[in-house]
Image (cartoon, rainbow, N blue to C red; front, side, top):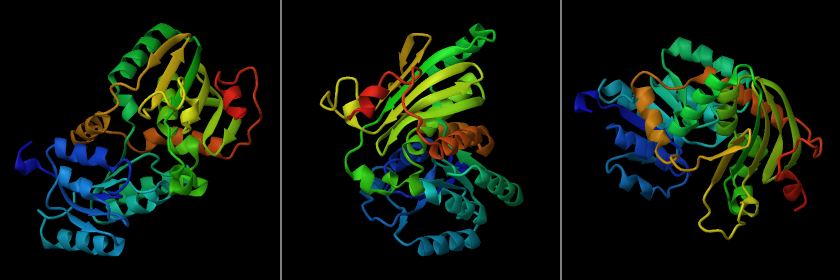
Length: 323
């Protein structure tokens, strides 16, 4: 990418868990990070990607800097704001990006509540900016091939699906914003929204949803989609891993079983943020309307009471409920 095409980026939440994937994506797509903000100052990771980033711990100073850059020269204005802040702040930070004349690239979930989608769509139309979100599983080559194969073979058939996603987190998780339901949306939203987007993308609109068991570290239930009945299990507890918490480095475990055919799709996951940036920078990408169905589903799960285990519960549900 030539310098004349290089875009200026700012990032909100640069000290967070997911920020390095965005830093890598900005770097690999040949663009420039000019400003970053985070209330925490442990941001040495910046040096692995860029060496001249203006960094702020106070959002007010960051805001003033971005506005000053915008007014000084068209060459200094921010083209994109990458948003890696806690989930409950996404709405406000998207609004900031549009206000300063930039496009927003927001981590999942774009918003926690479905009704906020309409307000953001109105602001998007008024501002002329775009709101993008990262739905990286839609870009996973193996999952794209599986979706195509299923659509060709289905002919109206409903599939029996089991989805398992276990991504171990330590005790810190419950004490951070991620463990606070009102800020993260709970386990189903914070770690599950990509998986639910994947299922809806593959098997069609939601027709019904049950929550069978939930505790602060896991949630499981049944999902009825247009072309599938899905038993799902989400956990941040390493004890739920197939080989237990001592099976090696705390790697995430992602498995989808369709009519008895198992596909473990953790491999191929590492570069999907870069691919997401390539897509949106070239005129593609995913917006609020694509993200809305999974946001609505996560809101339904968050506001549902667990009914207890049934014959349709996930195979790991009974063991997890007995802990």
